[in-house]
Image (cartoon, rainbow, N blue to C red; front, side):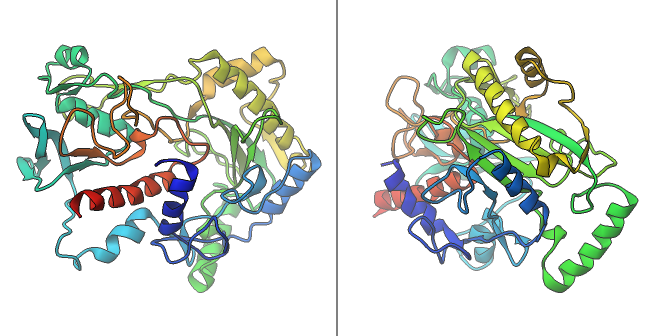
Length: 419
C-alpha cells in the first residue's frame, strides 16, 4: 500500500499547483505550489551552464521525467511562504471544536496501561500535565525526536534503555536505528553580480529597492527561497533514477547561512540521494529535556564516499562551465582541489546534513521494523507514528512533500479504523 501508484493520489490531494496541470499534480489541495516570482536572470545563467556541459533540462522535477537541470517550484502563494501549518492548520484554528493547539509544550513521554498507549505526559508552564487519549496517540515529532520520545517512554532496545535508567515497557530493537540522511557538500563562490544576494553596501541598497518592489508587486528578490534552481542527475547513465540532487543558491551558503560572508556570490549543494550509511538516535540519559545523541554516520559506508566523489566531479564540471565561471571572482572551498584524494579529503571535512533525516522508526515486518503498514507500533496498541521516521529508506528528493503524503494516507488509515 506504499508504492508509487498508491501514494500519488495523496501527493495530488495535498497540492494546489498554480502552473502545472497534469496527472502528476493536484489542484484544490491545502498546499499552494507556484513558480518562483524572483525573475532572477541568474536562472538562465545556470541553465545555460547546464547546456554547455550537456546536462539535460527539465521543466518539472516532479513529473514524468525527474532527471535534468531546472528552476524549482516553491510552496508559496502570492510571493509568500505557504507552509504546511498555513495550509492545513491555521484555517481551522478557532473554527473546529475538535482542534486545540498548545504551544511551548514539551512532551516528556507516552503513557501506557499495559501494552496500550493511553496518553502523554507533558511539561507546560513549568508543570507536568497529563493528556489522555480516547482512541490513539499519534507521534509526529520527526525522525530525530519520535525515536527519542519512544525510548523515553520505555519503547526501544531494552539494553540501551536499561543503561539510561529507563524502565522497559516494550523491547523493540529498531527504535532509533536505521537513521538516514542525504550527505551534502556545498560549492561556494564570490561573484560580481548584484543579482546575487550579498552583505555589501550595494547589496543593502538593492534590498531596499526590492522591499519596495515586493510591497508593490509581491515579486522580486524578497520572494526568494534562495535555492532557486537545481538538478537531479545520474552518476551513471544506466541507473534507473537520478542519484544526485543539486540546489543552486543565489547567495554564498556556508553552514546553512550561520556563517555569513561580506560579499555577493552563489553556491551549489550536491547531495547523495541513496546513501548506504546508517546512523542512530540514542538517549544521552533518562532526562526528557536532554538532547538525544544523534550520529548520522555520514560516509560511513565506503560506497557513499566514492559516489560523492562522482557527484563532486559532476557538480564541479557544471560550476566550471563558461556561463557560470565568468561571474566568479573567488572559489571559497574547493580552490586547488584536483586529485581524487584531495576531493575525498574536502568531502570528509565539509559534508553536512541537508536536513532530510528519516528511517528511525521504519516500516516493515522483520525484527528491526518499528511500525506496520498501518503505521501502528509493533507489539503495542493505540500508538501510531506519522512522520519521516517510518520511511524504510530515504526518498530520492526532498522529504517535505512525502511526509505530507504519509500524513494524508494516515488520515484514511485512521478513518478506516473508526468507520
